[in-house]
Length: 317
Image (cartoon, rainbow, N blue to C red; front, side):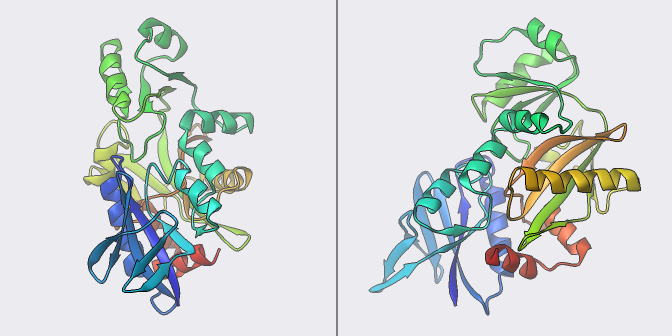
């Protein structure tokens, strides 16, 4: 039976979501094939839960317990935000020849940097909202408004779960929005606001075949799909999305193409806003949430996949 390290935790605002995802993976892994262990990373300390007790483990995933060595060569990644979604852990695992279920270090680093990722997608002829990057607290509001017309979105360049995002409608709201974003990253994106239908598409692969999941339509009670809307029942997530067959085909076609163009792997989620039959790419999530409230489990269920089945596919890939 193969040992599986379920990596979770982290120091970002996504810590709680990571723990929920890890518990979902632990509960749904095929126990006839795999022996799962949850490993939590917090402030540089790695701890493994064995028989209800916590023990420190080295970052090469080896530990000696009761004179026996416990080691892992396979990781199920359930850590949202750094140090997983930005590729830092993948560098470590690649060096130690440890397999993992998400994108490699290079791809993860690119997709977590929203501004760089959007520039890459724009060069590949995808529809992307106009944006600019602020790299410190010195900025000119007039210059911003000349380049990106109000209303616009202000968000951290490298953060997840919609943390630190604001919809700015008035010039007087800009400073607070930027300060809010700077709490989560030292780079801030000012992005054109696309008023349309927000949708999300899950993608994964079975061996070399790309599998597209039913599309979810997201309707937020707030101005947009922010942290509160995501995790405090302030949104409707409708699967399958109530969109035309034409738009469904556009989203599925774009999702498949992005998955292949960027060399994604594992379970991914790609978010779009549809406006006038154009699909604007909003974000690529390489380690999407797996808690009961998360979008991917909803899509898998609608497609007729069990979590056990898909988690097995991820590990076999």
